[in-house]
Image (cartoon, rainbow, N blue to C red; front, side, top):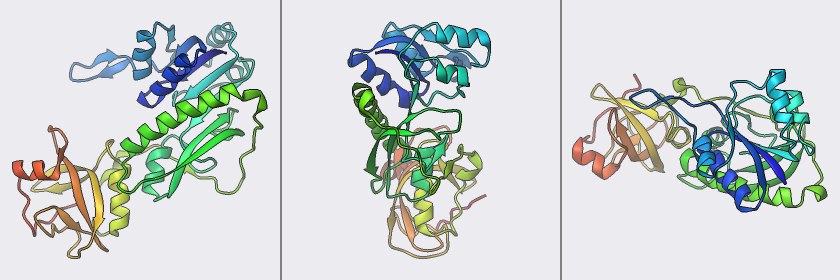
Length: 304
């Protein structure tokens, strides 16, 4: 097929690779514009932009798709279908209508649960046992379109957003290739009205750990916000990001370090910290972290 690909972050890159490897013609790649990044604040192309250029593909990065000029340029590509995954811009109706077979979205949840911006984070933070990928026919609403294909996967114990992100990215790449190969035979299934939830964008204010909450909730918060923005706590006046953990047995004052292996008491139960990061430093496993900065049993982590 002749495809317009629309995506921006690292999550989208395996999908672009899969479409190219499957022999599809990529008419153009749309992504977000380069933005300042790094210490020098120089404009840096997005992961999809960089990958598309490496593949020799035409790249477009308009700030908006609302103008008649952009919409005409999009339609002039005469694509069979647009494949959209974590693009980052709303698609006006003329864009949705331009490809002959419409626009297909790869969404990282089992719709209608977790429509919106942060479905992977929210699934882990809510303690969902399963999540997955849906291939959806796009319409004007926010992730409301009929579903063509879906594939579920269990959320693994101790799995972080970073790890689940990578698994779902590969799943999405495989599922869109399958969908395109069988598109005439697929029956769109409307999403039910029951079970709709929205995955709001993660706010940094959600990252502060409240140790009075049950350990199961603290565990989900740490894993769900890893690696970004990173759940955090205070120790000796310094903010520490907590990037991996597991549930463990123990009790004490909420926030109290219970042993020399960084088991920490919560409102109910305890968590064992497995990966941490000090400000300005790289992430480290617990053993390495404690060699550089010992935190003895009895230390009380603070939320402020």
